Image (cartoon, rainbow, N blue to C red; front, side):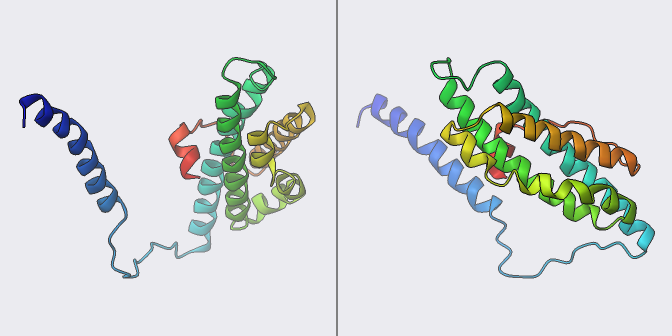
Length: 181
């Protein structure tokens, strides 16, 4: 076998082996053992963690919605014939599903804090209306009303957090984080 063929094989095989090793170690390999989770003991700790988790999840949802849905739509990236339209729609579809997922998680987190739960209650219907947003975006069936609806719901969630003492700031997730959900 020539030196060139060995180098070529090494260049192909080495990344595959490394990828398999990394994938195997990332899968956990817990062997079905239950892992102990830290749980807050007092209701004050539960409330503190509820607000913290709410802020984190709502911030990710807001960042994803703005970066990958609202801003590209307003810049014309979803219009037929636009450069990079397909990629923008795929990213927006992922962001739509991610946004919905994080908003539902934020709603669940808010249930641990009475003030936050009351403030977020009127927004739940708006969050539920975003359920099929990811699919609509991926198919290119989104319109200005859909984008404005996302923007409005995100604004309402931020306002609810602020009124309950849990101000939300946008945290833009990477495309990789969108893919993980």
